[in-house]
Image 1 (cartoon, rainbow, N blue to C red):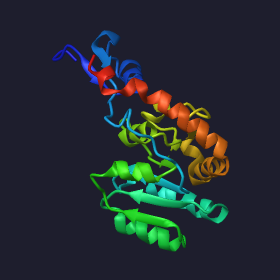
Image 2: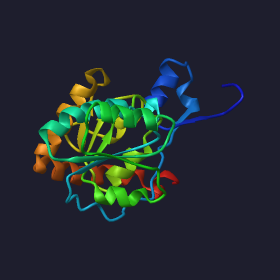
Image 3: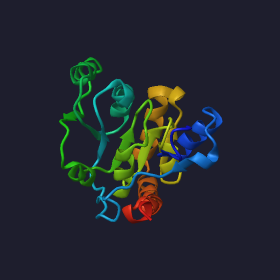
Length: 213
């Protein structure tokens, strides 16, 4: 750290890790959240039984875990899942979906018009094994989508207040735990409505104007 005066990190969790485990003095650490231009946009109407997940189709993003969870969800609900993104694991994930005999999963190539998918959806799912911050989660919550996410390093815990605007699932709980919480959310429209309202309140602090002050 002798070669710089400050180290900027994305999350409070990152800040703590650099200080406690990395030995970086607190005086040299500055935490600045990413912001999203979607904050303040028209929220999704949430009038469909569509859940979406967004990200690169790689091992980090945990879509294999999501498909295994969805194999349980699909048997107990009539919701549909859209996985939006492209990447090197596309074929292996499609093969896994076939092996699991999933009938209500769509793979959608990455698109510059991701906002239209937030508008179509009613719930957002984040099955990542780890994240830097999770901009797609921030975007989804800015559109009023209740979310289910693994409680990973780093980011989701700073956006999702468990049981208030979404659900956090221990990564150790795996697909079973993710399926359980997602099904709870699907079956409780009152929770969806409450989580949506609270998500919109939560993301106000991530406005661009707040970040550049």
